[in-house]
Amino acid sequence: MGTNVILASEAIKRAPKLFGVKTGVPGLDELFWITEINESTGEIIKKPLGGYPFGSVMNITGLPDTGKSLMAEQFAVTQAAEGWPVIFVTVESPAEYIARGLELRAKGLGIDWLEIEDRIAIIDVASNDTLRENVKELSRTISDAMKIFKPKPAKNVVIDSITGLFEHMEVMARKIVRVLFNTMKNLRVTALFISQKRSSHEEESAEAAGGLAVSHIVDGTIVLSKKLITHKWETETFRLPLGNVLRTLRIDGCRLSGHDSNTHVMRITETGIVEVGPTLAEYISKGWK
Ligand SMILES: Nc1ncnc2c1ncn2[C@@H]1O[C@H](COP(=O)(O)OP(=O)(O)O)[C@@H](O)[C@H]1O
Ligand SMILES: [Mg+2]
Image (cartoon, rainbow, N blue to C red; front, side):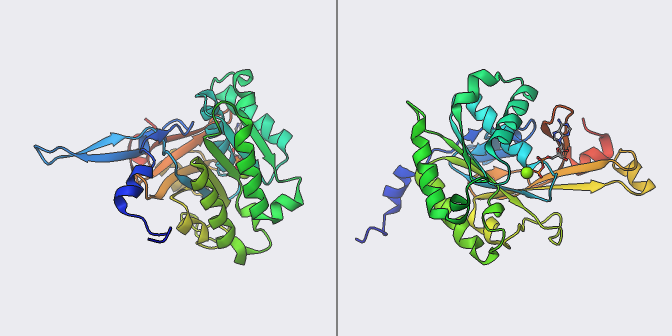
């Protein structure tokens, strides 16, 4: 048989175990689950996964200032605190700004920065045109960076943002995302790909810059939105004063595990930590708790 043909019985042996990888976002871990059927009663039991499915490539998308980078940083510091090294590819801001952001996120989550600072490797694409314009080169750099960590290689990769890699050439989006997706699968890491939405995109949709290329290739998409409270009636419905922002999060799809598909309210605390709350419907009737 050709090397591209494999029996399912063989492929299953190589399939990663299904378990959750802590997101570092309070309230989000519980929104991923697996379902099992009780043999005797036929009842469907939902078992919480406790995080992003291991080995998945998740896309977090939203307009600017919706909390994407905070979620990326919270994931990185949380994984590092668990002892699992992380590679953080920064495409928009230089490494020193990311390091400061990571330090702040660690503080906000009660994680000792000195314990984790050597478990996160930053690849600074923001200050390197060659890496930004050559996705194969970037893939190689990520693969090489895996080995910095001993004895265990990195288990997680964050790319903030992938849309920064095809800013002026959206026709290339599909190819670039596909190459990076395949690299993540070869490295057997859990990955977050952050993608920017343009304001012309429908707020709640999964479509990022580069069209639907991103959400079709990745394993799952999380959509972040925000709504400015501008009408008096909204202040009552959304329980916020005029001029405040209502933030929401929705898991738009995840092919590796079951998940909640409701729109949830979300907030950013004073220490800059993204937290996920109840569904929007529950929030409107009962408030945050
Ligand atoms: N310490 C903080 N306290 C309050 N708000 C913060 C803090 N840090 C960041 N934010 C807010 O969080 C929002 C989301 O930031 P960020 O994750 O960088 O957005 P994105 O990556 O989606 O563009 C911004 O509006 C920012 O003002
Ligand atoms: Mg950002």
